[in-house]
Amino acid sequence: MNSFSEDIFCYPVKMECPYCYHSGPIQIYPELSGWTGRKLILDGKIFVYRCRTCHRSFAVNYHLIYTDEAHGFFLENIPEEQTDTEPMERDGVFSFCRYTEEISRLQEKLLIFSHGRDDRVIEVLKIRVSQRTGKGPFHYSGSLKDGTIILQNSTAAFRTEVYVPSWEYETVLRLSKLDDLRAGKETWVDEAYGRALLARIRKKSGYPFIT
Image 1 (cartoon, rainbow, N blue to C red):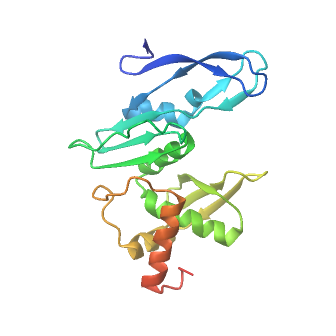
Image 2: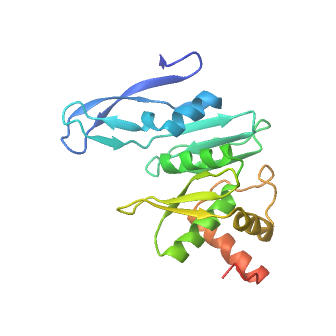
Image 3: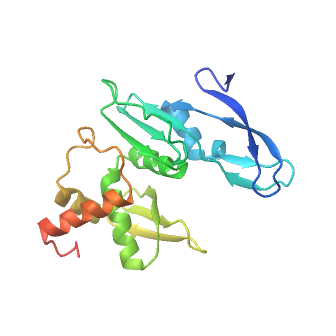
């Protein structure tokens, strides 16, 4: 295993370019942690393979665990095709965790938690914005100083940004009556989870915003 820095390790694997079918090396980072790991993940360069033959680039999805002991959580990306991978289990160090099947989803979760947001509420807001705009899917891309949430349409020919006011986030958080994030039992929080939570809110609240 090659050392990237004092506490970050990577190892090379051969990757076949889907465009020209030539193979070349890419460094895989199986475990990352803390501030340095967060920076590498959110930067995203470690998930991009650039072919040395045709010079095209494409995203690479692989098994990765990110741990944040300071905030008591971990994220694990398990690609759908890796059916033999056993998920890491919570212990006394980690109060909550999330599993994903795409690196882009793990990046989004990490950004949400880095901004002090609840990903369960964000999933509901993403669905609401898709319903209002007729576009989607959306992903979380940041927050403004006043608490406004920025969602982006990740598949449109032209990038679409939607600004969700902080009161809407707080309304969903209040109406959902969720356990504290650190006490929650959820591990897979995705679109399906968001739709189920939204349906539950609609059924119980009758609040005008939740239509």
